[in-house]
Structures are given as structure tokens and as C-alpha cells.
Amino acid sequence: MGNTEKLEDDQKEIQSGKLSANGGSGKKVKKKFYEEEMSRLQIELVKMQEWMRANNDRAIVIFEGRDAAGKGGAIKAITECLNPRYARVAALPKPSDRERGQWYFQRYVAHFPTFGEIVFFDRSWYNRSGVERVMGFCTQEDVEDFFRACPQFERMIVRSGIRLIKYWFSVSDEEQEKRFQARIDDPTKRWKLSDMDLAARSHWVDFSKAKDEMFAYTDTKQCPWWVVNADDKRRARLNCVRHLLEQIPYTDLTPQSIKLPPRQENEHYIRPPMEDQTFIPNFY
Image (tube, rainbow, N blue to C red; front, top):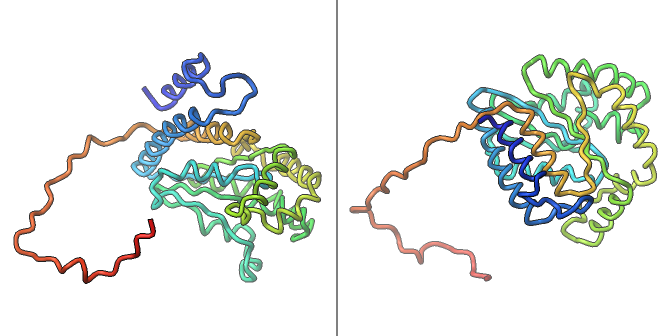
């Protein structure tokens, strides 16, 4: 049974009630179900990565959307169990003076995958049609040039043999408001709320218009946008991971069970006393 057929059978079990996702229509996904299902999907992600390595496959996955829509949490869930040598996250800061003088796409190309790799862009070249445009960091001519160049650029990526998958995380203004407030109240999350996030609040409609026009130009047959309903974070992550798995035609390459070899016996070597080493204090 291939991976697609197996995932479809699992989905039938969920829909038939053998697995309970939320206990009723419209309710949020329960924590227990989420953890069990995510654990199962993460095993499939590892299988997918092993298949990509074995077949010299390459992929770019773009995560875009509103502030606080859950992009970072989805990326974390996907990459948590992957081999970091072959799965990288590209979350680029604002461009340097040197990068501003380069071809616009150049700074992103530098992070593209080689054989066996998958790169997750936590925001991408679509900054040009979103925050840069709305906040006045580029000219209207820059935006128009982006709309002309972007579809061609992405077709070049696909023709080169790199899989390109684009996700847009959609969140309602009510839910975004709740998440912003939660970040303000939680000191461990306050760093997530940048000055730019705060400034963008007064441009909600402007961002909506920019997103709609961006979709009109870049939601192409070769490189479509996949929209993720992200008001329920757990459901959004599960749906995104499940969909990502369906985009890669992987098969299970899990090796045979590993048997540990016997450890080398210590016949003559005498180790220095433990007291000679400097240990951290036992705080707990």
C-alpha cells in the first residue's frame, strides 16, 4: 500500500468516527487526538524525508499569511522530527544595504535546496507584494515588476526539478486579536509581536487588498496557493502536514531493525578520576 492509500484509509476511519477529532462539528480539535495524530504524521514525514534523500529530490515549502496566523507553529510541527541536516528553515531578516542593491530574488535563491533537501521559508519573496508594498518600503513600480517576474521565476524553479509548495495561512481578525493579546500577556511570546506587527494593525484592509491582488497574479496552475484555515491551530497544523505529505510521492524506505554491535571492552585503559572534571551545579 502506498502512502496516499494509507493516508486515505486513515482519513476514512476519522470520518467514520473510529477516531474522534473534535467530538462534534465546529468544535476545536481535542489535544489528545491532535497529539496522537501529529505523532503519526511526523513518522510519515520522516519516511518522506528518507525517500527524498534516496531519490535526490528537492523541495521548497513557503509559508505566508497574516501575522499570528500560525505559520511558525506549523513549521515547528513539521520539522520537529526531521533530520536538520536535510531540512532547513529560512526566516530571513530585513535586507541589508548590500542585498537591497541585488536582484530582488537573489537573497532567497541563496537558501535554495540541493539534492535530498527540503527548505521551509517562513515568509519569502512575497514580502514584496505584502509588507513591503503596504508599509511603503518599495515603489509601485517595484510591485508591478514583481508581479511580472514572480510567475516566471517560480516556473523556472519547477522546471529545474525543485518542488514548490505554497501555503497561505488565513486567520480571522477576531482570532488574530486574541493571539496578539496572548502574546502581550505571555513574556515568553512577547518577542513574536514586533513593531511591524503593531504598525500593520492599522492596515488590515490594505493587507487584504494586497493579498487578493497577489493571488490574482501568482496563484498559477504550475504553482498554486494552498489556503489553510488557521483559526484552529491544531486543525490547521494537521491539515497542512497531511496535505504536504500528499504532495510528495514517497514510499516507505524504513530500513530493517537495527541491532547494536557489542561495545568495546575496556581492558587496560584507566580513566582519570571524576573529581578532576568541572560539573555544573545540581540546581534541581
